[in-house]
Image (cartoon, rainbow, N blue to C red; front, top):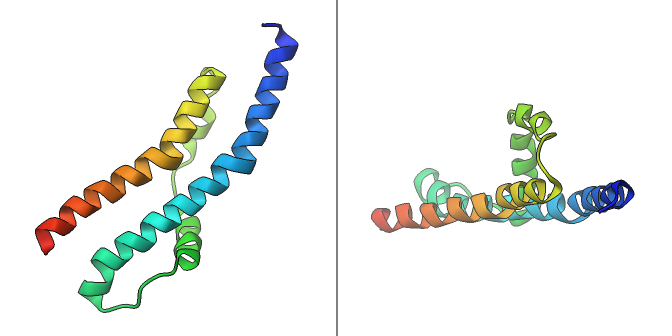
Length: 109
């Protein structure tokens, strides 16, 4: 592939990341938070359930405090490696958390 083609693919990849992956990741994290809140926080603390909208907001606030130093260390990765990494952090990790949360819930009930 030519260098110009890689530049175009890189730009399209960044656009896809900002338009699709990041909003979907935020919504996914909020959805997982709302479910796990209902499973663990509501019964123990007798608090109301979170709607997905509130959970998305709380998830975004929490993400402000996360360590972002690994973001700058991705320069040596290829475009496909960056997408795999973004997909993993956006979708696989929240679903794994939800799965492990469900397993823990089975021991509570």
